[in-house]
Length: 357
Image (tube, rainbow, N blue to C red; front, top):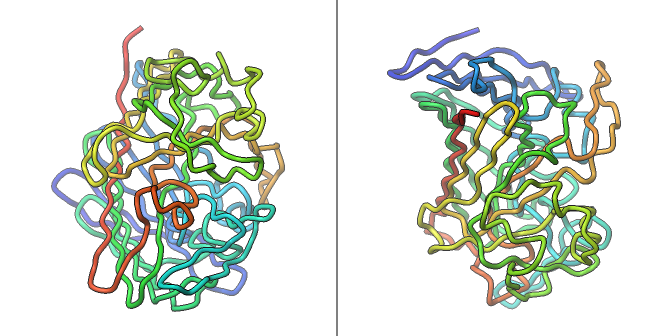
């Protein structure tokens, strides 16, 4: 175990086991005032985030597993992972770029989800400690999962004053598409047995992207006005999640992309979550144009790993800051294309605080 002290906290590295092929996996523990985050090199995942409730009681507010084998065994939830090359869905696993059509693996019905069958969540990243955090690096070779170009990705996790910040940086040697996001499931109660249906969510977005039966955007930017998708004012998640609404039926709950106000590349609020029992508040800011709000509809209590840990439906919520799903096939959506000589930067910050009763 090694520890590096920084101006505002500490960064500690320890072993986290080995993958089935014998690759060593590391765990970095980042501590600062009001927050402790643990990040593993397997999938560049957030393993835990510990924060105080309104009474000062510390608890873990993200879903995950106590050991590496749980993450290795679970290939469907993406707990805490950096997903890529393309987070979210691409219709039929196909897109055209520079007049050439590319086919990537389909792993979500007829579509491709979160990069394909072996996405960034299944890879062991290289890591190095930095001030207040850790930098994860991955080189994805030309043709990886069918995507063009050798892509180099750096993801920096840093902690400071109750906040976990994620800085993404990507470059390529050939025209490609990229959409990176973090797939943490939050439960602000601090007890993973509780559902998130009593938590309040605010998403400052006037539009969202409706989907077809395969959860691919139709291309329309629809108004949230008068729909269960209007979270412009804080709303308890469970209030409308079971409404007689076709979009909710398709997703089995909320699993949609909201169109954030403000310019792409500028920092904006993506969401705010409040748990009235614990008093914890999560504020999400991002430079991305969208956020996928997902209510853990597919969690089904399946046990994973040697500890046979499981998570039930609706016990975690995701706020995946991102470009829109299937953007390569929707020219009107903000572009996810990346060209040689360019560097794609993105920042998302998860800030934790508390609210008095």
